[in-house]
Length: 79
Figure 1 (tube, rainbow, N blue to C red):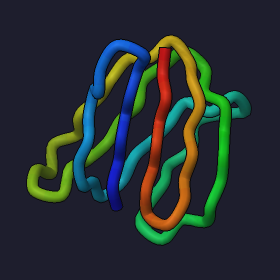
Figure 2: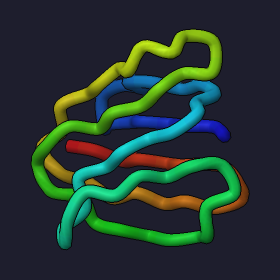
Figure 3: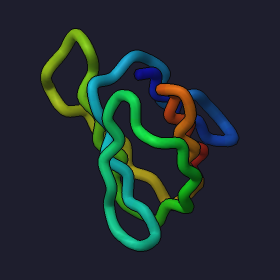
């Protein structure tokens, strides 16, 4: 699945991932390939993801934002 993490200033990450864990308003949640469509607000925390070629988990600290999951594309707008 494709993950895009963007802020007003920059593209923080864009690429293919195996999974992504997001700090949702009602608790952290993990998105895997073929996940159902959803939109969620995000709280301050850490977005964690595992790339397709590297099994090492990567992370991005965020101050909050919005996540949209649709058709194997996870779009995360952060501040």
